[in-house]
Length: 640
Image (cartoon, rainbow, N blue to C red):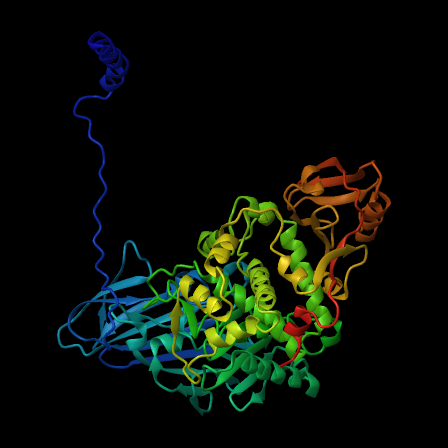
C-alpha cells in the first residue's frame, strides 16, 4: 500500500511538473478592479420638496421632446439622478436611456458637471454646491423617427408621452415618496388624454401633483384628431387617429366597449381606480403598443379598427386584455415583481398569473361584452391551442422558465420560437387557467368556477387603487378556499412539466375539443389577411409572406426536415412559379400519397431543390362541441 501511494505521487509529479515549469517565474496576472456601489439605496421616506417637470412636446416634425426639470436638493454634496430602467409592464430593463441627449445640469445658473455611473449607466452623479436649494436638468428625449430606431413616440399628428422617458428622479427614495408636478406644451390645437387631471391653458396642460410612481404609471396620448366617448361614470374611451375618418365609430361599436367595462366590473366585483382612461391610437405611423397602467392603458391599433369592424376581430382583444390588468398586474402584483424604484431588478416568476390569467380574462371579456363574437372567440381559442400543441419546445423548457424571456431576449426576433420558446406564459398560461376553470366546475359539481377565484383574488377592497402583492402560496390558498384540493401540487406540475403537446384538456372538460378541417375559420382567414401571410403551420409546418418568403418554420416539422429556415423563399412549386394557391393545391394533391412536393428554394443568391415530404393535406384548427346543452365553456363566455 505504501509503495503504491509513493508511485502514484511520483507519477503525478512527473505529469504535472513540466506544465508548472512552463509558467515564467515572476510573471504577473491581472486582478479585478474593485467596485463600490455609491448609488443610495431606496428608502421609504418622503423626499423633501416637489419636482417641477416642464416638457415641450411641440417639435413633432423632428420627434424631439425638450425637458426642463427643477429638482429640490436635500443637502449639498453627492447626489445621484436616475433615468427609469426597469419599467412595470415591460418586465425587463427597457428604459430608452440611449435616447436621452443634451443633458446639462445647473445650480444657481452655474453648470454642475455630471458623471455617469461606470456600472449603472442609467445613473448620473453630481456634487451639489453649498447653498443650492435646487438643481435644474435640461435635456432632450429624442423619439425614434424610423422603426429600426425603436418605438416611434412622436409624429406630426400624434404623441405618446411616457413620463419615464422625459424625467430623472433622485436616488435614495421609494418612487411613491417623490412628489412631482408635470407641465406639458403640445402643438396648438391639439388635445391630450391621460389618467392625471390637468388644467388646460391654450396648448399647455398643467397636471396635478402626483408621486413619481403614479406619474410614470400615467402616460398621455395627444393628437391633432381625437374624440372621447364616456363608457361609464368612471371610464372613458379616448381615441386619436392620423385620419379623422378613423374616428367614425357607430353607436353599437361604442356600446360594445361600454359592455366591456360593465362585464369586467361584474366579473371582478370591484373597481380599483377613481377614473380609468382607455388611450387608443389608430395609426400606422406612431409605434404600436399595448401597455397596462393602473388607471389607464395604452392601446395601439392599425387603421380600420372601427371602419373595418366586419372584416374580423382584428386587434379588439387588446382593450379587454389591458383593462384586465387594472385588477391583475396593477392592483394585485406578484411580490417579486413589485420594486420600490425603477432601478431595482424585477423578478418575473409569477407572470403566468400576471399575464397568463390576464390573457385568459381578455378572451372571456371580449366574448361576454360582444366586442368579439362568441364564434370568433372559439376560433381564436382553437388557433392558440393548435399552435402550442404543435410546438415541441415544452419538452426541454418549462413554462415557468419562459417568464425569464423578457430579460433574456427583450422581445428580439428569434429564428425557432417553436423550439426556443418565447413569452409563452401568456397563451400557455391561458390554457392552464382554462384547465383550472374546468376542474373547479368538475370538482364542485358545477357550483364553482374561475369567476369565484376572480372575485376572491381581485375583487377585494373596492375603491382602493393602491397595490396588494401576492405569492405562489396565496394563489394556491385562494383556489383551495373555493374548492379544497392540492392546487399547489397541480400548479407546480403545470409550471415545471416537460410534456409533448399543450395543456388543452380543460377545453375538452369544458365541452369543446380541438379538431382540424381542410378549410380555415373566418377568424383564421382574417388573421392571414391582416398579416398578409399564408399560415401552413399545421399543413407542413411553415408560414410564408406574400412573396413566398418563410417567416416561420416549426421545429421537427416536414418543412424543418426539408431544410427550410426563416428567410428562405419558395420560388417554384412542382416547376411552376410560386403562389400561395399553387402551394396549397400541391399540399392537397399530395394527401395520402407518397411522392414529396417538389419545391425550388432561394436562399440569398443560391437556388436549390427541396422535397416537402408531407401528406396530411390542408389542416386548419377549430373547436368542435362535444358536450350537450350549455357546457362549461358556454357558461364561461356568457354575459353576466
